Length: 323
Ligand SMILES: Nc1ncnc2c1ncn2[C@@H]1O[C@H](COP(=O)(O)OP(=O)(O)OP(=O)(O)O)[C@@H](O)[C@H]1O
Ligand SMILES: [Mg+2]
Image 1: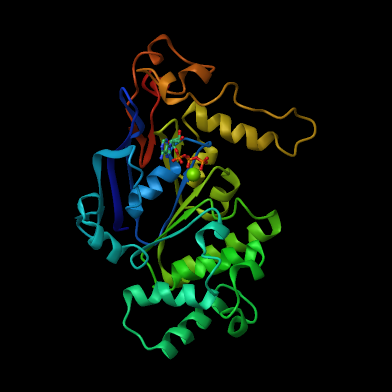
Image 2 (image 1 turned 30 degrees about the horizontal axis):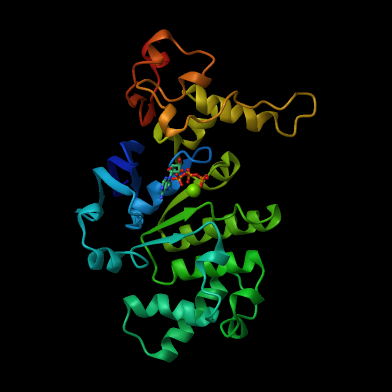
């Protein structure tokens, strides 16, 4: 399959008064045309920073893109000017955010916000934009689409708003959709509906999906391949079947074990001991070493490289080196 997005050696730094800290580093992965690629990891491991980098939305004055490239259609998104990236954002690459309520403007109608997304990238008449807006709302499963376009965000439920967000993201028929925790704020039944809608749209439109979540269940439900993030690093990349059946990294194994014990009344709930290190606690070695039951003496001071072991199965761990 052809590659549509290539992230290489991405590093985002946080500037503090004295020093620079690498919030994410050595982030490299490819997304193939039309595939669903998952990014999974605990809170604070750098999932959203990676998404914002792809969207050209790293704008905080204390953050800087220190290194790396993000290649889309032979061009490096990180080297583009603001106006160049604006032409791509929302059109070729679109994003859905975690909190629909904060991503939509409460002062404007649903229709206005859909048409605004169209207007930036296309030169269409008002009637045509209205027709396309209603069409996309129907496509994302909104009942009474003709009436809803004249309503305001506060008039809709969380699940409906998330459908609207998906509609806004899909309206220009993007090649890549980045979904950052799109169902976290929703209850489980609505969550399942939104995930199946996203699967459906992906196969109908043939777009690639980057699904960001802390939930392995969401990954199992939607993704072809997955990258496991930990402490600003990628620790494992694999197709979903290999990841669940033959996980290599102790962190991935811990994540899967904690899901498996959920719902099994005969087993006490497994949680990985300890917490994610903060940036000032990150040493030179493996970032998971402090929590790893099988850490070797070299793990503390030497950072393992991300290496390919089987076809397309990558892992960052010294244990695999040792056999
Ligand atoms: N503007 C910022 N200034 C300082 N630190 C930041 C900033 N943005 C992100 N960080 C830090 O970078 C790290 C990665 O953040 P990020 O938002 O990417 O995590 P995440 O994996 O998306 O977590 P979550 O699951 O909670 O959304 C965190 O430690 C966070 O505190
Ligand atoms: Mg996040």
